[in-house]
Length: 301
Image (cartoon, rainbow, N blue to C red; front, top):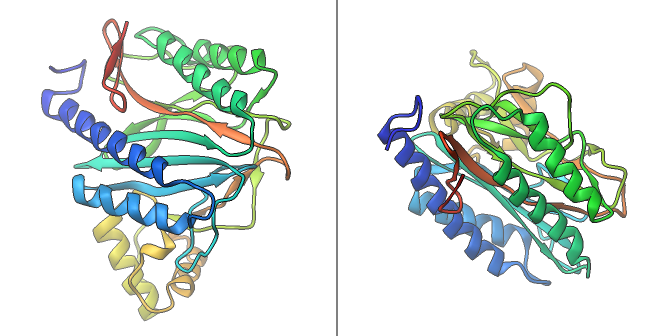
């Protein structure tokens, strides 16, 4: 059925992306064990997405311990899982229509930190509906996480998704704010509470493996030109991983494109060293009587 301004075909594409995502996220989560390489899990999940859908909405994020977002393995990464808190954040698109969801797997013996993010997500989804202020949703998230004795990551938020746009409005804060946005029927949003035993603010780290197209322009360097051709043809405006580029000296090509403001990078976002971050996320479509969770086929009202 159509939902507000979304026609039947568009709604079905969002649903199909969500179904594929849940399948892949389940399979990838089963692979996460101490001794398994991060790259093995990321490449498996991305390959499955390419097999089952039109492509990845962004590279598989594998954030460990104090990392909160934008962490994905490099091409030659040999890092293995240990006694870590592991957040898997996966994105799928069908004809550009996006599903975005995340799950945390804990090997640190801190299950209540995982539960804090999961319960905050459940409460947030229950609160979503037309006319609801996003600041109200944020307050629900914050209350749950603080009730567990932890802190929401205050400078990260949920977000809207649109065709070939993995991060658009409205913003869904992880704390109460006085002035949010009023949700409308047909809004498609990714709700993603982050809980931490740290101070509740992330900052940019030094690692950067994910990039996005800023603008198209002519470039003189041959490798940079080849990289730009692949980016515009295969990934368009969606984020991509440096390891996805099939060009010689890909890192150098990306540096040249970044220097010319053709692409921008997504540095890894991190809490203070030694702290832990958990994440839970679903994508929902706001309906007339609540919302439909596309990444978990259940309707809320």
